[in-house]
Image 1 (spheres, helix red, strand yellow):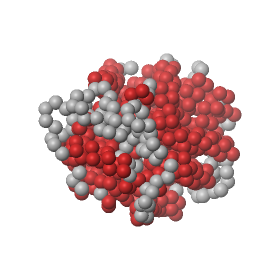
Image 2: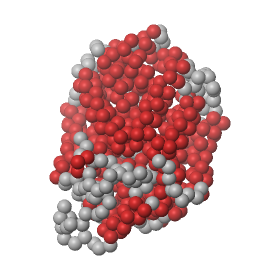
Image 3: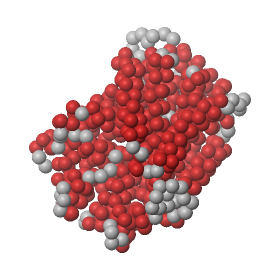
Image 4: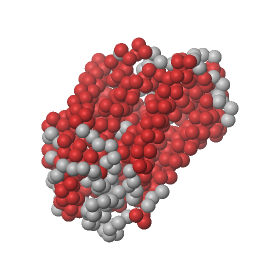
Length: 46
Length: 535
């Protein structure tokens, strides 16, 4: 593979797979909230 | 892993709207819908044809400026108005209901031919074991057209059933109907929870095997070498926006429907970013796997990669069988490749069917099983009459081309105009998205959806109309394209208007007390501007 092709392969992997990794980290830092199916939970902090 | 123990509240009462039991299952199902045949057989060639490595730039711009913002529009409508596409749009504005039925009919057309391609892939999985196409002296292309599909010499409508396609199509519909009858949690969630990890593992093995084939490096070189001149071509940018739009299943009604099954306090934007980047990650992986394999094909034929590069049906059912025949452990490559097509296809098919099932379930107010059977059996019947025939390939080709452009694209354009400039709902929807989401949206999102969205979609639609008018699609007879292309696309709009005129019965979900409760909470959340730290 040529140098420029390798460079673009790495950039593509870093931006797209890196974007997925960052999105997953962001999601894991914001735990899933669970709302009551019947009554809303309005206790202030959740 | 689902977390049923965390589910709060009363057990699901009869007729109560289902919700995904966990965020993870929603994300897997949304990825299952987005990752379809196009990721595997379309993206690699689109990228290669439109600048190779340089395509990354318009591609990323398209994801961030149109793909993800429009995905959030779908999420916000489905989640805020908690209904299938027609019901959610109607709750937003009575006049918008017709757009929902337009999407339902678009999904009907896609479903009837999508099942045929999944059935072909399933058969090719089987053929890979014996390399059945080797028996035809004229090669894999002749095997596909003459031996397998037994394609009629001219485009038309034939009732000559091809047994080799009819059987597997019946199987595909059986599996799809069983999943659909089981519902959102027991059917769609479970199927995606099982299939998606399997698909990823299978595809990873395929890619690793492909990159070690002789000549693979030449394929990757062709795929990643940038052609910067392409960036000055507006067609390349349109290709990037068009590809992202179809790849993310935007404006099909699918994401509206799926997001209506999410809990009220869901992180919509955080989940959306994962779905969008997972979809692109899979595409990149597909690009590497496909072009490594095409590199081997060129090496084997002593030709250039540009001579063997192909997309769509030509790539899957002509190029790949040739690779399977020549490569070491070719049968393994075949089973993994066609198996991946089947799995990627079935998870997308069930999401397409869910748009139709949910719409009728809401309008009729029937239980899941009855509504599913009333919808899926006729859909399967039409599919089984039209596509396992000697003219199935022609119908599929024309219907696919026209429903994509004059169905999905046209409907998406109307949708962004209606919800943006027409109803002026973007500020309210942004507020809804921000309420429980980790990534907040502001004016930029509204500009992208209300401004960039219509401009990009309008440009693509005008281009397509010009192309399709200039010459008959695929060289088919004018009457054939007129009926199954233009006629079909027009009939979808007429059908949508008629369905929107049918009154909602008392049993329907229009006046669902559960939604009234949801609406109360949502509106309460929308009133005051969030002050300080969000909780």
